[in-house]
Structure formats: structure tokens, C-alpha cells
Image 1: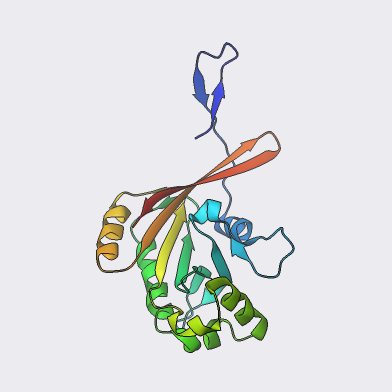
Image 2 (image 1 turned 180 degrees about the vertical axis):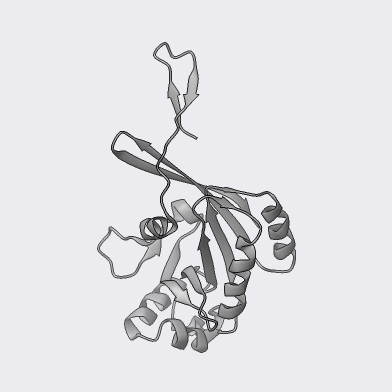
Length: 192
């Protein structure tokens, strides 16, 4: 939360903002790149680790759309589901549906489905440490949820999923507009 310090520096008052980016705007901010490279590394400052963007708005075999599909350094698929406001019961079910679909593809099958172009594969191999690790790709897929806040019941589900070997992370964000300037901060709220 952002606070304004009073003129006499004796009190704080919270800064309220009417800026509420839509899910697609948030997605575009998260996947934008400004370093000129062709590989898109999602920000470690946002997600708690660098992630390689595979694609956004990825269709599952049931024609559902996952917001963002990425890989971590170990080569595991990371399904990132975004919500504009509160992440409540149901968002995790949506992400689990995507996880179930994407987890069916391992190694070469994952690459053939989601990164068929040679250039994309080169980025993947450079990110995970070489082509020799192809059999490690998508061995342990996981979920990251991003929302302004979360219903705490999602955390109990996250605890249970992690006890079953499914890593689960929740990231909160706070959009702030001050005059014509816009700021957004991210914080990891839950990580197992």
C-alpha cells in the first residue's frame, strides 16, 4: 500500500487510486519487453524468479484460454492465471484445468505443441541450460495466480496442492495512479 506523508510528517494517509487495469492490460504489461531481445523473460521482481514466456492466451485442447504459459529454469511449465480484482474460489479450478491439459505434454511433445519453431526452441534451451535437458521439460508443472487480493481459502487449497507435489504461488498487485503517472507493485502473498 502507498501512503502519503502529511506536511508536518506526523501522520500517514493511504493513497486511493481509481485505476483498475483490465486483465488483458495487466497481461500486456507483464509480457512486454523493453530490452530489445527476442526471448521474453518475465520479471523476477514480479514472479519471484525469472520465467521464459512461451505464449499468452494459449488454447487448451478444450478451447479454453490460459492467460500466460511460461517455463521456469528447470524446464517446468508455469501456468499464470490473472484476475483483475479478487482471486476467489474458482480461479484455482480454472488454473487446475489448464495445468491438467498442459501436463499431458512432456519433453519433445511439449516442444512440438507449444514451441515448434527452431528460434523458440533455441531460446528454451538457452534458458534451461541446453538441449540435453529436453527430457526434463514439463516434469513438474505448476501454477501462479495473480490478483489484487485473494480469498484466504485459496491458500488452504495451495497448501494441499503443494503437499501433493503441485507448486502453487499467489502474487498480489496494487495499481496506483498519481496524477497522470501510473505505478504498479507486486508482492508474493503465498508460495509453496
